[in-house]
Image (cartoon, rainbow, N blue to C red):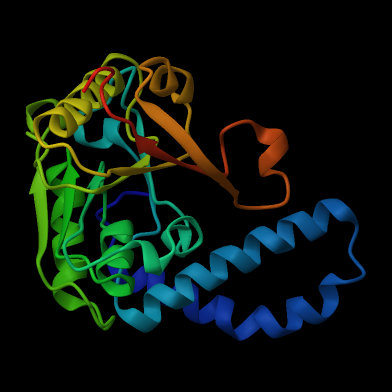
Length: 252
């Protein structure tokens, strides 16, 4: 489905799913396991569409970057993290009024919205390669019915390799936005900001495909893992969120 399809289509789908959810729920208990898994997927999808309809946002599509001529081996597609990912990975008590959040590969802005709505961040930043996806994120921020606790939201359209990570960022979110050399270069830049301005930085990595590379720097300490879904533990990195702290440079 093209990312340019009108939002009205999503709204109609949400209305249809809302009308049949109760009936499907009542029947699901007697289904075989395979069909129960399909039901659970339908229920999650329904919940996300209804949430987006209620709050006037659109973030749910899966979009190939080839649609915009941007696909590369280390950058392939956009797929939003689950709503409530931050709520499960980042306790509200860990965020103060001086903290700055950044989502590298922010797509249509789902995690930017969740960060700005749930936490008292001083600033929330989203950096996205695709101009088309970033434009949708801007419309989401401008038109959402969510009450934003942080009103200082910046959406930047840029290649992450051309973007200078600010030295006051304290929470970094990654939803497997890029891999390989692009990931390695980005992590080097992130470490450099901590070395220039020593501070506590939390990294939240959803679908942590490049965890080995991350830990191989010797600068990241694993704090906790949050699994999303019953089979996440068996499916490798996909479906899990891993939270890290950046450590000080040796001898600093």
